Length: 373
Image 1 (cartoon, rainbow, N blue to C red):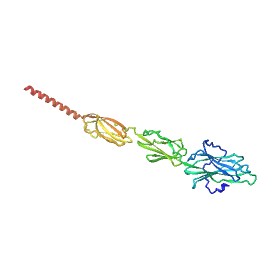
Image 2: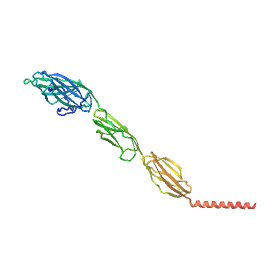
Image 3: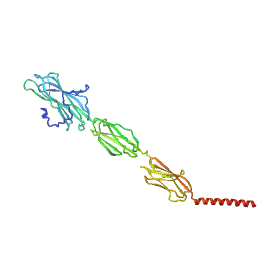
């Protein structure tokens, strides 16, 4: 038997369909490759291969038929029985994938025995190989049935290529406010042989896993703080091919600072040690501005939760409005105002009365001198 004579070959059964009864519905436009043979008993027969294409892609299943047709029986021959059909792939080096059909028979001239096959090229399948077919059988002559082994017969050269790499959707760039939830980037990749994926945030790996064709790959980005980010995904197939996509994310700070509200103040003139103290909070503090009755009197940088203290020395009697405005890095601001009343002391009031009396005396004195003239 041929099986034993070719036992030196490495038989790698890679998804070879070898069930004769199953109809694979080979394309009616499939090409037929033939070779003509003569049996040991003198019968004429044809080995044939029906194949739709000689350009195969890895990961795609190829269906084809091989068969044996009896053109004419030799003298005294009544049938072919225990027919066994074979397929061999060989790239002339080390590649060898072979398999055999179930046994069959042909009992009349013009009769055909056919076997249906399938094969799925894998990543290990070479880019070019040769497809051979062969058969062995006995012929019925009533005694001493002659045995035919036609060896391997070259039929066609097969060219194998990788399928296109995975395809992937391109989500829109995203903008949202820091602290707002429900934000994610969702990609959908498609391919017949998906493998794994990797997501990078500004070049650093943040997630990896395996993906399925047509199923969303969602990555949550609620954790991001204010700033600009780039997320890039790489999806790979079983043939070491990848496709990537990048999404830019802009996270806004829309939260205004929080500032406390000191109580209004009232004190007498010339009292010292008086001040206003504000405390403000923001994740991204930047600058402040202090006004008095609308005029800017001080500005600078502020630090989160560090008190801002402003002294109130040397104020004249009167009412003043002090307003502090704090601004964060994104331009969000908050303000608070404090009313300050400076009260004149009693000594000051007496001094004013005395000055007024002196002024009146001076006026009377001037009037008297004028009358004498």
